[in-house]
Image (tube, rainbow over all chains, first blue to last red; front, side, top):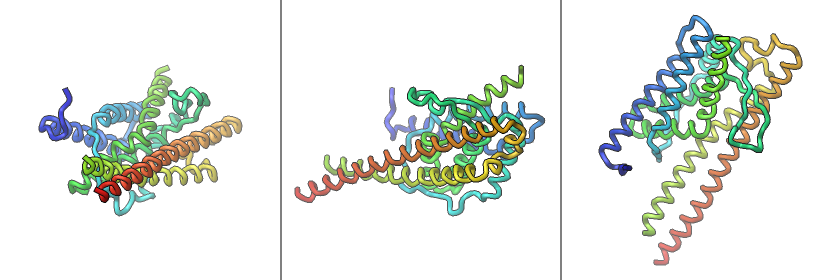
Length: 178
Length: 104
């Protein structure tokens, strides 16, 4: 049974799904910004858990469209971002470069690609952080824009990084066990 | 009926314009990333993970990273070009619709 957009049950479900995703995005960003780890394995596990929740919850976000397209007046400070990237790199240690197919569904491209887990984790962080900052402006227009942006940037950008990072971390964690 | 169609097209146009603009920011950021990496792979390496390997492996990793970044950019540009194409079509359709409305 599909419910119409103005059905109160549908709206309640959408509201719950948005809150779940926002919680997942905040948890991921908090982990990237501040999680102090004992070793690389622990960091990989925490990041992977966060990514799996993000992947699950983003797919439940409602399809919205925001006329306003609110943007940040000032982007995230580049020096702050650089520090975040350094902090991720320090916790990843040797678990950085991995091999994969760029698009496994594209049979015409069989070249092996070199993925970089630091690039994946960092790019996901940037997309989510920007959208969270827009969401936190607090107006209805800003919240609408942020929800649209979360989904759109997932479809066009950080979704690939997310699935590659889940894939790579799986194998790096297995390697740690061996 | 025509009004409904026009409304739907206006919405689609606004959505596509938003997509093109937001995607443009991602493309710009990736162009800079690729450019920076080509100029100085070590500056993007952090923690020196490219330094403790043989020259062959280092070369392979750098070449591999450049290829991935180029593919990402190509992919993003293609998606944006598709959106631009859809936008043009939607605008033409709306224009035609508005002309039809004016005639009525």
